[in-house]
Length: 137
Ligand code: ATP
Ligand code: MG
Image (cartoon, rainbow, N blue to C red; front, side, top):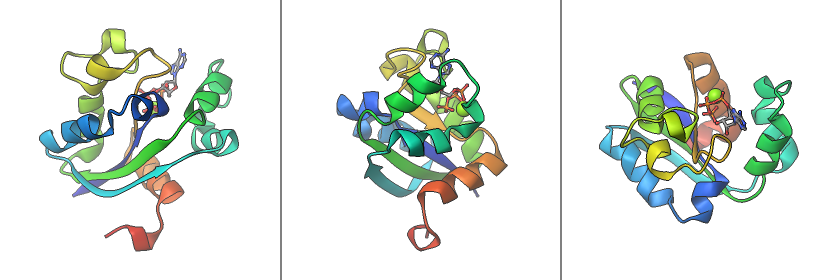
């Protein structure tokens, strides 16, 4: 079975939506196999989102990701990476399909409640960014 890295972003933790979002993962057949609530520095957020370093919204994105606690989770299931992206919905909540996390909860294209790995190599790298081997069972 596949694993992917999920982040419940600061806009969602601020509005106390952690449980409602986690329920969406479970309803989709994804199992939460690791979970913790942390506060990133802007530098750590920049390292995590380094692929976007040249994008115009990079400063805004890293500031936002450091603006409050996030809940980082490892989700496991068959086709977990694609399944999680499906449950999340489109990056811009205005384009997100009904019933998806971003359609129901996201506030804007920037403050869009969740992150999910987009490919197997990214998932492995992102899981290792936040979790040690001992935390992964
Ligand atoms: P994520 O990587 O967070 O799962 P995604 O893969 O749907 O989201 P990306 O294109 O990878 O979208 O963008 C990463 C994040 O950068 C988005 O989730 C969003 O928070 C932010 N972002 C993307 N586009 C914009 C934009 N035009 N303005 C502001 N923020 C943006
Ligand atoms: Mg992305």
